Image (tube, rainbow, N blue to C red; front, side):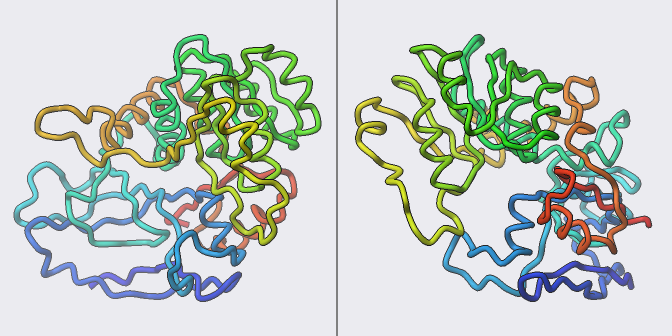
Length: 336
């Protein structure tokens, strides 16, 4: 029997670690047992839950598990498992926990030998930015604005730059600005510098705006910098946690006059289909991203603000919530 430590939010800012017994003697043929090596905090989702922000859907908010960026080592396999072996490192959507049992179909990717577990655990964060760029149909040379530079916004900067876009970003914080410029952003502006950004973009404005922000004020900025026949790609949740609506996000002078396309861009197909029509699917995308990390074309060190023990998850959430020093995300080490 394995004693697994599992993080759980019982209520806002009330995080505990429960113990769960895993039966390692009666695995189903397609199951594997994994030991978590590291997991990365996805700040937007997890800090919102920790702080008590209303859930995105009408569901019971607590108790709830937290986390989904997990790198684990396989320590046992079922009798029918062929494609995976004990000792392999894999990427999964498992929550912050020390051990877990999962089916092989839930494995997202095998980690290449040249990629550290810490860097690999950020792959899904980069996947979100990559999917946004794919869905935006960004072309080489397209002017693109990324609004909000948390880790997801920064992943969009990386992906847009790799696609050959001219990338401009908006943030009021110095650390994300520095990181975005290091990632290759052409220029980064504060929110009160929007006129300077528009002047630089010229009459064409932006072909695509990738917004990771929830505020209505930022929604207005997104509409303002989008050009004719442009597209706004939504990686945030506009209006989440805001009771009043000071601005109509569907104002006709923007949405109707410019004939804009608004699209939620966080999801991709889970797998390819039998005829290979879904080549840019979640699992293949993650394999590509891990390969790009391995080739040093993507550098997750730029978004990792530090490494903590799994037992310090509560402290990590508090640091991300307070934003002292503008931390981006933290790696949780499950061997400490």
